[in-house]
Image (cartoon, rainbow, N blue to C red):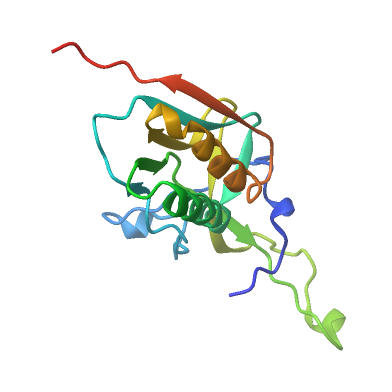
Length: 179
C-alpha cells in the first residue's frame, strides 16, 4: 500500500501519543482498528556469551519513526552483517512502534471541492504505527567480537541512511562476569 503523505509530516511528535488499544476490553478502545506493523523480526544472528563489544545506534533528538522505516533500516544493516560476518553477531532492534498515526483522507480529482468537507471533523483514521524515540535512546544494538567492530559500524551507517533525524554510534566493551 502506497503512503499518501511523506514521512516528514509525522516525524516530529508534536501531539499527545495516541496508542490505546486493548484486547481484553475492546469497547474501551480509542483505536478501533489497529494498523499492522511492518516489523516482524526484532532479533537476528547468533546469541552468545562470548561477544566482547556492544555497538549501539543512539538517537540525538526527539523523533517519531514509522515501522516501515525501522524495517528497511533493519534489513539494510542485517544484510550487510550477514554478507560480511555471517553468524558472528547478535543484532537487536531496541524500540517498538506503539503510537498510532492518523490521517484525514481528502478527495482528489475533478469536482473534489464539491464533495469534500475540508477539515470539518478532521480526526482521521489510523493508517500506520510509529515508535517515539527520546534523545540518547538506542534504536539498534549489535553485539560482536572486537575485531569486527568496523563492519558493525558500517552496517549501522547503512541503517542510519534509511532513518530521518540525527544519530550517534556508540561503542562499549562488555564486562564478563567473574566465575
